Length: 148
Image 1 (cartoon, rainbow, N blue to C red):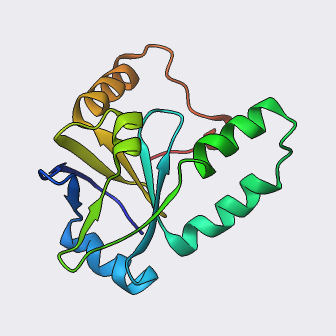
Image 2: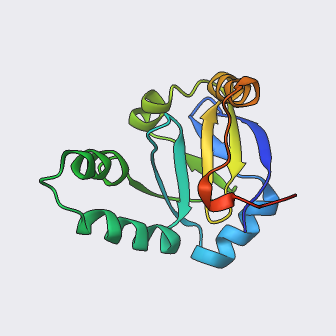
Image 3: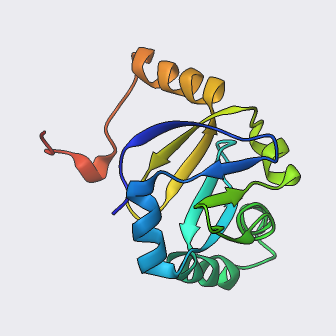
């Protein structure tokens, strides 16, 4: 279970050091084999490879003749890259994915349970402010009656 938000920096070679608390879990769960891909919200998704495979299978089972389905296939599967943690626990973020997400030096790694989101720091702050300032923020119908 991956949770928590961590502020990180890309190094000069565009590598990202995965926090130790997640590094050990990733080594255990998938031997450091990961998938990094694009998300429609202009962030990146980082999955353990085993957790990504069923998602890819579902995506590729959708009709390629449906515009929305094929657009999601192009985005999620088309941008997907197999990557691995190096011996220092870092991942390399490719130029294509950095450009897609607008990643600069400062980034935010956000645990989402089964995977992570990787955001450019400014984009993270902007979308977070929009959510918090929105007067029409509504809970999804699936969470009606949910309480913290």
